[in-house]
Image 1: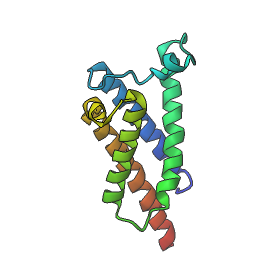
Image 2: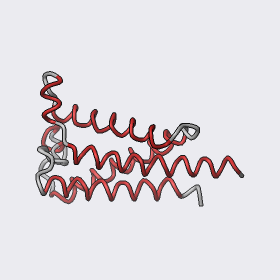
Image 3: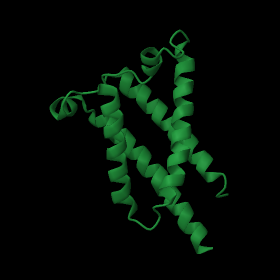
Length: 140
């Protein structure tokens, strides 16, 4: 069971994050387009929106799978604090890369609290599952 758990966890997180990003973008909680990377880098810019979202889903899946294994290394630390710190760091880095602010004041204005909350929920889910799995394997 534990050999399949990382893949199921990454799939659930990918689905939740992709749907959450679509929700945030649709209701204008974020000022940027989650599939804007296609236009920015010229990759798949002329493809339908479904392809762009599918590629975003796959990218989130791979990142979630890698982070699952990285978070499993922190199984002796307190999960709530570690997940909050990692989630805020990840959300901040993503917002920083997207907004590309000139200074910290511009960065503060560009921050999206609903996006940070979505990333925090996903990070907590992945970390909690990874640590639980690691502790179960260590007990046996």
